[in-house]
Amino acid sequence: MRRVLLLALLAAGPLAAPALAKPKGDPAPTAATAAAPAAPAAPTPKDLAKLEKARIEAFAEYETQLASGQKARAADALVALVDDPAMSSFHAEAYGKLGDLFLGLDLPYAAVTAWTRAFTAADDTNSAEIGLYVPKAMATAKKVGDSAILEEPFSKNLALARTEDVRGEMAFLAAREAFHDDSFGLGLGMLKMVKEGDPIYPDAKALEGVILNQQGRPEDALTPFEAAQKAGRDKDIRFKDSLSLNMARSYYAAGNYPRAIQGYAGVSRGSEFWPQAQFERAWSHFRIDDLNGTLGVLYSLDTPFFTSWYFPEADLLRIYAMFLMCKFPEANSEIEAFRTFYKPVHTALKGWNGKSDKETFELARRYAESGAYDPLPESILRPYASEERLRSSIAAVKSADDELERLKAVSANPFSETARRWVKERRDTMVDAEGARIGARIADQEAQIGQMLDDTEIFILDILRMKSMLYEQAAAIGKMPDAARVVKRDERVRKGWREWPYEGEIWADELGYYRVDAAPECPAGLARGQK
Image (cartoon, rainbow, N blue to C red; front, side, top):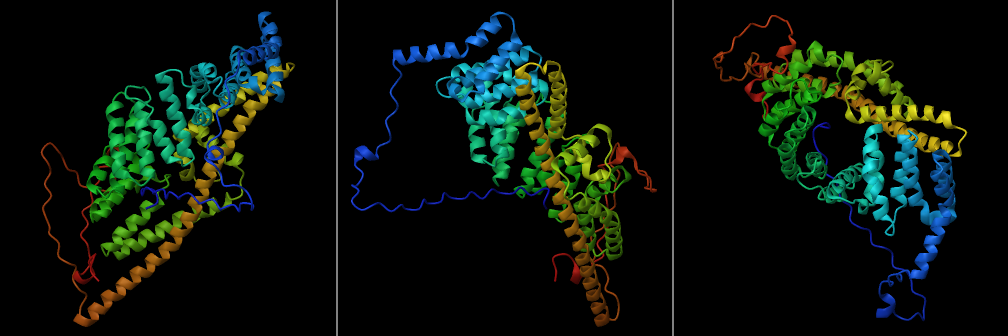
């Protein structure tokens, strides 16, 4: 099951470096020559005085303009400094000061891009000083909707942290970058820096559980998920529903299907995750041979409320459950309905092949903002309407576009071109990354649907084979074999409940509560598990 099973990361061992041939006559390395190189000598007072003099000269124009209140010209001076390779020793400080100036000029996005460059350029000699910009950068990044911009520089230099709370949030953002790069071990190590009581602690423990699942350790993932649940009691319902879904997935991957069912049932009915939880819960019922439970859970997804949702695997699971119960006419009808519905979907997905990342992002953004989805079926784009990652990216792109418009008002200043270039580069990077991610998902859906349509042909052949077996049995005994006998129990209405007979109507408040009581029609020799 592609949506549910959590894939284990296969860690590749290090490759041995090839041996290099040593020229004849070279002496064997001695202890002295084989030792690690000595640390560089500490700078002398004379060296420090010389460096400080060079620093004062480098920032002289900036200081002069700033003292006279000319912020724009001070920014021009800093831009000239960072563009000079000979001044690389002072670039980190210049980027930091430039971020402050941009913020004062009401250019918050440009400020964040400057600070990220400061964090990247910082080294052991100035990390303490540059680290003072971290809290301001995190607050401003949240304001423009692009905290992700800080993930990469933080992942490379956690020494920038100046206080415990800042260190925790930095470590969380750095761990997200490691997770995106599939560096799971590194991400887990970074998350250890987030201490209990830190505001980001529940999110960090939830991310730890996700990473452990990605490593194929679902049972280990339950511990951090439980810690996130305990620490996140005051978090919003979306966080809690997401956590319930991930815990259920861990139980499923661990083979504990009853607990998985309980976890999926814990996702609130009003949650954006509820339909997906229902589909995955159906698989849990299927794994314990509860075919009626499978059909009952899937029934909600077969109602008119979900006609514009994308659940082809749920339809195939329903067909398979009917097949195992020897309900061949119903299974055949479902197969025909599946092919009728998904063939046009497959055609539309194939038609999107070759579209650019920018076109794909704009398609998703248009749907999220206005509900327009042409030329793709709405079911393909629906998940992105409420996806937190896409919403954040759309908000960040809007912030960037607004700032690029404001920069036109100061286009006469040299700094404006640099600020415009940095903001536009970040904007385009986000658009391309999100478009590529969504485009890859669409391509994957196209391939999956094509395979599923092919699989329905196999289903039809399997049904014909089972029917042939039934006819062979009938020929041998002179009549069609009776269905295997099953225990029948009277249904009783529980105390405090009322029961109405089903007359074809579908009510929204009944979703998630449907029960199916379908008796298998397989003769004893064809019951599931028998050959």
